[in-house]
Structures are given as C-alpha cells and as structure tokens.
Amino acid sequence: MTMPAAGPAPGGSRVRFVPHKGKQILYHDFSNLLRIEETMAAIEESRAIVRKQPLGSVLTLTVVTGSRFNREIVEALKELTKGNKPYVKAGAIVGLSGIQRVVYVAVTQFTGRRLPTFSSVEEAKDHLVGVP
Image (tube, rainbow, N blue to C red; front, side, top):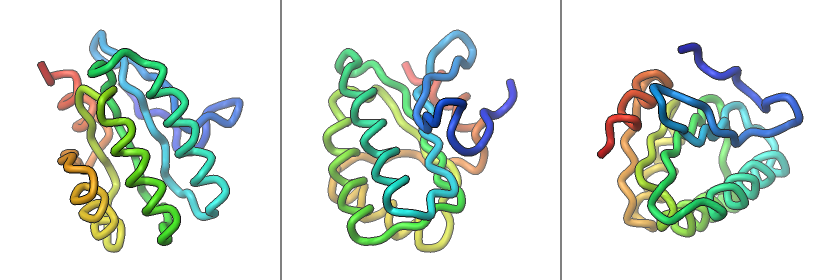
C-alpha cells in the first residue's frame, strides 16, 4: 500500500480515514505545518472527527514530519490528545525529530498516553492493525 500524499487531501482535509489490511486508520497529516493557523485548523479537524466515533474504536496515525510547534500549539495538542483518549483504541506517531521529541514527551506526560513512535508510515500502520 502506498503512503498517502503529504499535505492536505483534495478539499483541504488533513485528517481522513485510510484503509490498511481491512481496517480503517484515521490518518492525521500534521506534516509540514509551519503556521499556527493551519496547525490549529488541523487540530480542530481531528477533534471533530474523532469525537464522533464510538468510544475505544479509533486507530490513529499522526505524521508530524517537518512541523513547527510553539507553546500555544503544544497546549492545544495536549488538550486534543487528552480529549480524544476515550475514543482511541490505539495510536502511533511518525516523523518525530529534535524539538518534536520534547513536545511528544510533554504531551505524553500531561495525558498519560504512551503513543509508540515509528520511522515509517507503513510500519506504524502495520502496528495499528495488529492491535487486538
């Protein structure tokens, strides 16, 4: 299976379901987000989609390659991750580097969620579909 294209899908969506081995994964393309406005819009898009799903049902894959973060974004990510927690069965992150790892640690400490990190989208997808 090929990796979804980086950046928003047609229509501007950065959060969308993608099929993988017979299961649906909610793909968060948070890659190359450089402006606070587009980052906050992607966060809101995730919130709106995830919280319409049945509790404990969502497999999430978040790609953050090349994105920038500031304090406001970190706080929004903490709230998103904590608020989405009841709906998420399992999650994974791809693309962490440098300062992004510091943000990841802050978010996981705040939310109590330990999201595994992977070096490739395919590896993360395979992990997610294998979660019982």
